Length: 336
Image (cartoon, rainbow, N blue to C red; front, side, top):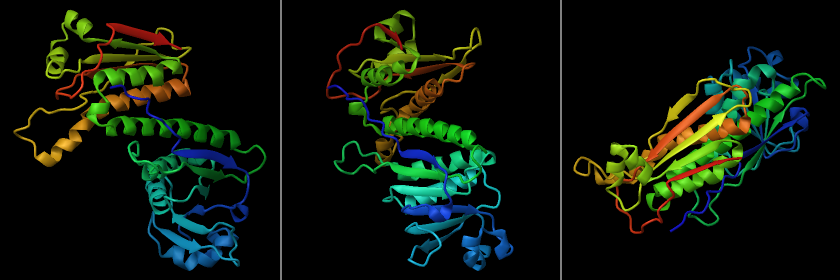
């Protein structure tokens, strides 16, 4: 059995748009505001909602359906009260918007597109993407279409636009790799053996300017990786040790930051202690390895020049499988 490459569609397509909130056409318009004391604390087009907004707690929102008489052009207006937007408060708001409007594909956001709001903006995107995520690899027609999220920015011609564009570019890369990590973690064990996973890593990471080494069971035995070899001996699928290195263009002799992620693709150990209902979760015993691989992939795409990172992911497998994978080579290296 071979594993086809996991497709990584962008969970959300991010843009900056130089327009005012009242002129933006969208399925949903999200306006982030501080809790008002008086109507003058709000933009004029939101002033009619001041009595309702004053009653809301931090993170709560007011939903206003659009009509022909509305001061805005979106189908729905969501006014979110965030007195001091932070990454976490904005993330919770983004999660509520994403979950509440999962079918919407055109979202406009105002109130976060400022140079001082970088952390809040990235938090909102993270929460929104998280709420829309679905693992739909085996369900035809069940995938959630990527949403276009437009950050409205109506400042002067040059004020802060480069900063907002940078924040959106970073968020786009991060969320795509978070989705890859989640897809790897959710993949069932029969479709993600150590050999299959190693092939996925080579396909998805080596092209990003990193170097990848895939070390097989013969190398592991020769180098006395007894724990990894012994655990892997419990399965017809041989173990692998995957090493991924990213070295920035100006990293030089900078000592590496080493990330180690556990990669047991299915753990059948402790059967006498586990409830039957808990066994389904054992496919995610490799979430640590998926996380560090996604982190290095994101770094390679963002290309920070002074960073040197190595990810080490041991991939034994402790459960038997119905099919035996073809043996891998003793060592595979590659670089873009």
